Length: 272
Length: 258
Image (cartoon, rainbow over all chains, first blue to last red; front, side, top):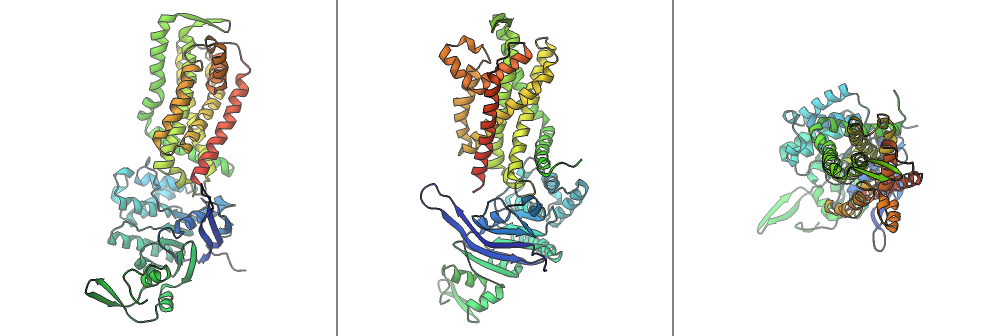
């Protein structure tokens, strides 16, 4: 028997009850698996169902149908066991502003029963990796948005998870800081951590993800390696794009072209 | 020591609150302990010296003793409600602490129990400080410090549940003023903190007994100044406790989990 994959989403459907009228189906029959050491991307416009999918994966929202497994544990029925090996960075800021930067990390690890000594060492290492060492004793309110974002990604790693789920981890980060986060994620992957990441940035997805799922109106349109998706949907070597009136760029097709084509927004790129 | 998983979860959340409490003890000394002391001074000494003694339920006692015990109940109401309402609203809406913890091995149910039990612990501590002053001043027997603990804890759990429900139903922090002015202040003024409810007209007395603070006042006074035990207070306290704790947990869960 094969060992269970670190993350398995099986026919996940999520409907929200609405005050008036019918239910709204935010996620429809979504299925995928993430292997150890794999980085899997969820791409889609706002409202595509990325965050809802992630809330169901973390076991915070119950699924309307389908199941989510972290390892062999169903996250909804056995949240304690399942989430022991799950690290999540939500899209919204959820830092505990009653603690300073360092204590924040150490305290978060205690929810996973990580011994304090281990947690302190881990926090030091992570703060260094994320360029936050100098801020260790600062209160959360003194951090800029970008620093808070970094800290929240670092916090998701405090329990040394097998599965790391990141909802738009690099939104609002400067390019150099984004690279810093990518570096840490690459290290996690090399340790065998399975990563699920939702992003708006096609470059990020193309660079980091072994496979991506393109999500639109709650449904997965396709799942494949970024290069395969490009080859499949954009059957040509170069695309032309008028970036300003009179200025036309010729370039190789990329994931963004696929994304725009599949999700039906064709602004700016002709003939795809 | 190995605790069952869910008890460990609640303990973990409780410990978080306790740590913050210890770290910011200066703030809590003012907000938790100074307020009841101000009431004690103003009413116990100020008004107490005007009134002398009063007769209630066949017992004659000094107004100072009467009001000291009333301020225990008032402390339970205010501390329990405010921590459950404003405290929990901030943690749920602005800090999103509930959401952050409830995606770790600790569940949302445990987070909410931790919140309620902490709120009740802190209120009980504040009420015990008032009781201690009453013991030192000779108004209460020393044993009341011990016998008060369960009544104080259950009462403040009840008021925290009321606060948590208020937080769950408020769209923004300003809306917490509704339960504050429509529920907390009327209870504070009409449920026997300042004067015996027997002094109210019969119809109003019956209304006053619907609200939990009247029952809390009655039980606290039995334990502190020896007023006769009114058995009606027990089912009222336990009934409201059950309803409000369940409502608080249910409504907050519904607000957070879609």
